[in-house]
Image (cartoon, rainbow, N blue to C red; front, side, top):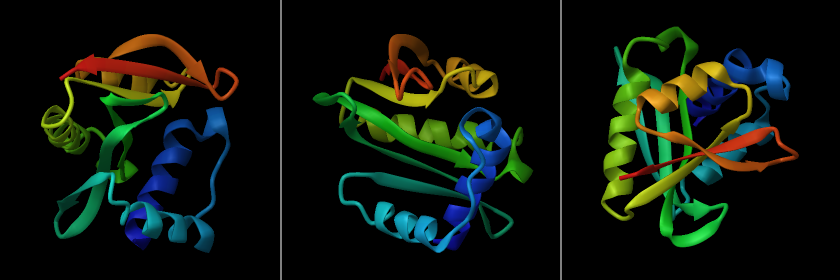
Length: 145
């Protein structure tokens, strides 16, 4: 669980910490990941390179909006040392396969003005929706599966 929490914090800070604030790796955050990774509603996939965790993705039913006909890419994170090595694309392919097994469309939420992430999602077949939350600091992307 520590590796997952570390990747989450490191990718957050290097990817969009300048937009939403820097996060620290705390015992509370590690515990949150222990709880999240055992959630019965979320399917987690972990990518390993050279025997070490390189990234992860979690998918499940849409939480916002709550819609039983809609899946959600809840989280995708790759250790910054493994960015641009295909880990994110492989995780996304796995996540899309899992989503497509249960839903015909999906949503994800990401920071507004996060150009790198938006370009990645667009390249993976997602399109920006006209939806925001968190006082406009997050935007939604959607796609058919």
